[in-house]
Length: 204
Image 1 (spheres, helix red, strand yellow):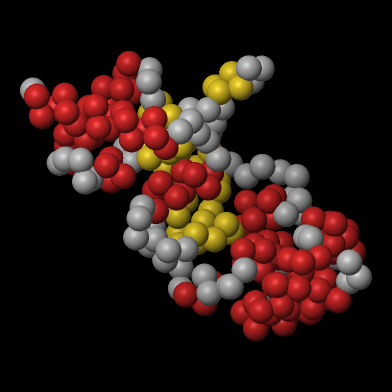
Image 2 (image 1 turned 90 degrees about the horizontal axis):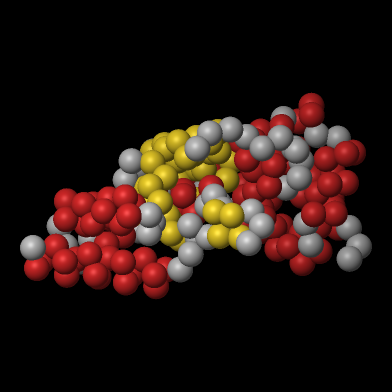
């Protein structure tokens, strides 16, 4: 019993240290004790209402807003918690990448991230978050914006990217970031690389 109480105290102390809005799994507390003991501790705090169980094995210390009440965590935070400490790369892909850049107004019900770690998926509310193991060629971009543009435009397809989409990118991507993403041109299909070059050449 003393051991369980000690683990409980250490677990909740770390949760408070992470702060509201943080997302975690039992693996984030593996240095505090056995997986089973940590999992039970998190389950007890969830039942008490101190933390929230988002999905099996996934919890958050929810952020709150005076008007909106309890807030949902961002897909990125859930994905990072699922990926764990060993995953060095997470790349938004598909419809989610397009939405992040404003190229699509539709918020996808399935949020996809490419990862160098294991494939995993979890449903949080009505949203399914999928981590899809991918080859390094899709994860080797040097800049965050470069990877995001490549994935978003690949999702939309060459025939569905025109003046409207280009104008949105020009407005959404800061001039400094346009220059930085030139380092990722060789990782993009030719038609996307041409768009990236054009964006980089735009006056500030």
